[in-house]
Structures are given as structure tokens and as C-alpha cells.
Image 1 (cartoon, protein in one colour):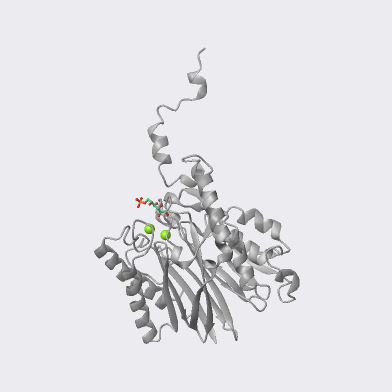
Image 2 (spheres, helix red, strand yellow):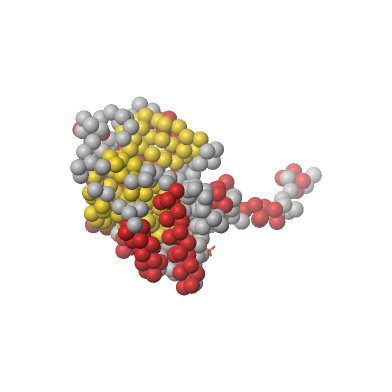
Length: 369
Ligand code: F6R
Ligand code: MG
Ligand code: MG
């Protein structure tokens, strides 16, 4: 059976501030998707949240970027936004950038990751969702999962993985894309994906073309032309039987690497792996965090989820994240805790520079002769 797995997300309003989603919003979203399941638009769905982001996880047979599925998500977000406004939730409709829907969600505000595949006899998938960070946050863990034999034993041991994988990388500034083969071209790949604010891994395929992983890649600030919060990305990874094992997929999250985001989308901080019950950024609106929901998919139906990053083996990563958070916070408004000036272009920097323009003289003019 060929199915499509769509994960579509939107910040429709936060509770309290930008820290979480309100339970009423989740139940409205569930009602909307239940109707779509009843009328056979969807095979199955699971509604959840990560921080202030509402996450719609859906299966269907309509392929990726399908207008019916995208308009279902869009209308669900609009209905939830109405409730968010009624409750006075914070930033109600924050990610709804456009007035009306036209065809699909590209450039509309909500983020999406979708993949179409022939369902295997047993189809384990892990859906990662993050809050207070950006799509490039997946670059490092994806590299480790699919190209680093020190992370993924299967790259060495499993004959079905030994050929490696293909990485499709997007340049989100210049809107270009390129495919790299791993392991053959890993040095070139790393040159690009080491700049996660610009180069973002979009899809990963087996060498013969089977889809293995996909991410959401929308950049809200680039769409809106001003700072509107970070993009709080999602990632789908298929597991096992010629693909990385579940444990190989989870392993990179034991290292809470530094990502952009956190307070006002303008700081570096550790990506803290958390349980679903702890996906509510608090300290300094963070630290940025990630949850991982595991499902078995059977005939398009979700069996699960399991709270994969809630496991005690990630306790130490959480502790390290808190230590890194302490360390980074001590820098206050200084780089590299605060992002570099070129990543701050949608914040106050241009206005402040404009204001002090008169006072900014060239060094020579201030020198006494
Ligand atoms: C970061 C985020 C928050 C807000 C911050 C200020 O992605 O959502 O850190 O940027 O709480 O929010 P406003 O400007 O809405 O008061
Ligand atoms: Mg928000
Ligand atoms: Mg968010």
C-alpha cells in the first residue's frame, strides 16, 4: 500500500506567552481531523503540540503537497486561531501570514514535512518536533544518523546500508538545491550544512531512491520580510530494515548541540531532548527543545505514539543542556550567545545603526592632529 505521511504545523497562539499550546486548541484540531477521517480524506491522524506549535500528523493516499490536505490543515489552523483569539492566547494566528489559501501551504506560514512511500510489512517511523529553533537544527543529527559510522553502526555492518545515502540540500536564501552522495562527497556536504542558517537538509534517500527522511524548511522571517519568530521545525525519519535502527536515529540527540533560536529567535542555545510532557520552553523562553514520537504505521493507521526522547538514557543530555544554558546565559547580550549581527537583520540592529549614524564618525576624524 502506497501512503503519504504529512506533518503540518503552525503556531496559532501560545499559552502562556510562547510557552505551550492550550488543550482546547488541541481538541478543536482533533475534531477537525476526525471529520476528515470520517469522510475518508485521511486514513488516520494524531494531533499533538510542541511548545506553542500545533502539530497535525496525518496519513492519506493523496501524495505530497496535495491541495485537499493542505487546505484541511489551513482551515484547521484558522478554526483553532478563532478559539485562540476568543481565549486571548498569545500571538493568536502568529504563523498565518496570508489572507487566503491558494493551492498549497508553500509561503503561507505553516511548516510541513511530507513523504510518500510504499508501506513495508512493518513501518517504524519517528517524528521529531522542535520549538524555539530553526530548520537547520536537523542538519547535525541527520548527518550523524545517515553518514557518520561512529553514530550509525549499520553504515559499517549492514550490507543494505553500506552504500550510503543521498542528501538533498536547499539553499534557503538563494532558493537553489543540490544532491550529495554520502560517503563519497561528505566533505563537500559538510561545507554547506555546517552553515545551517542557509543550507538545510530537505530529504535523504537510499541510493536507489527510496525516501528515508524529510524535514520542514520554511523560513518565516524570509517570507514575511521581518522577524516573526523562529520556524520550529519538524523531521520525519523512517527506521529499520536497511534504514538506520531506531536507536541509531535517537543517538545524536544525546548530544545537545548548539542551535539558533531561544529567546526572541536571537540566541544560541542547546537543543534539549525532552519527554512529551516537558515540551514547554520556560527559562529565557527555552532552552530550545525537541521531542521524538515513535509510531508503527500499519495500513496507514498510527500505532502509538511512544515518547522516544522521554527515556532515562537522555537524562544526562538534559542535565548537560541545563549546564550549557547556564554557561551561555552568562554572556547576556554578547555574541556568541546572542546571534551575530547578520542573523539579527530583522531585529533592532538596522534601526539602532540608523539612530547612531550621526554619532558614527570615521576614526580619523576623531583623532587630534
Ligand atoms: C522565540 C519566541 C519568543 C518571543 C519572545 C518575545 O521564537 O517565540 O522568545 O520572541 O517571547 O515575544 P513578543 O515579541 O511576542 O513579546
Ligand atoms: Mg509563539
Ligand atoms: Mg514555537
